Image (tube, rainbow, N blue to C red; front, side, top):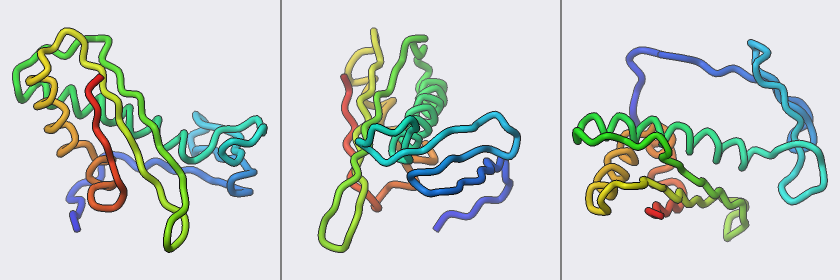
Length: 138
């Protein structure tokens, strides 16, 4: 297991009511209602929040990878994350797909960027070996 030597940031939230509740950050910048996936409730759900966080982090990791490979990352880079909640033997599980758009970058170079980003993104590191993850260049 990896160990942090220096904490750069700590995100803090307070959640009540679980999937039918609400969550807010300690600084007040996040205040959301929660509802179960597929319900008609007003709020979002943990799977959507995870997808948003991972895709944002992955774009940051693509930027770092572009610096290493000396490639200009296009401003319109995008990651569409899909996080599935499902059941299997042993209970509930997640699986995910990251659909990565790197317009105007040659496919081989784009593949190298994606691979390096997946090795360095903290969310990717967290999921490695824990859930099925599919990376797709679109």
